[in-house]
Length: 103
Image 1 (cartoon, helix red, strand yellow):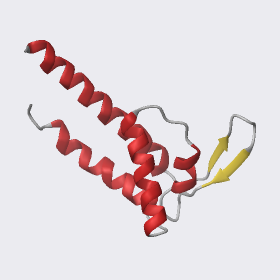
Image 2 (image 1 turned 60 degrees about the vertical axis):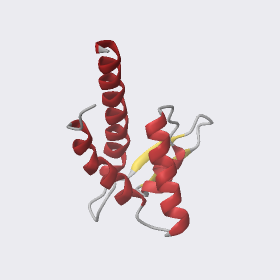
Image 3 (image 1 turned 135 degrees about the vertical axis):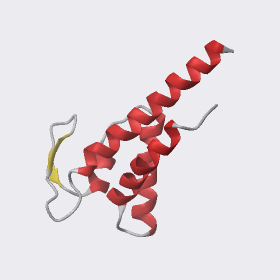
């Protein structure tokens, strides 16, 4: 039982760290003083943007939670057309609530 509990805590912490990493990447591009990002694809194509949807779309993520956040931003872009960075920021804002949930 202790091993399962420890594994659960480690997995949950891994998910939280992955979500925070994705949110931190796009967080600095939000707002009127948002910074541009220089993205280089594996082919060598260079893109300069501060659009959260473009940044997330061109990211190559492997973690399942990070992929879920990218899909969330795509859904927001498809349905509304705006607010992709805000959605990712709201997910990050909800993460501290998960750290205190007991098993």
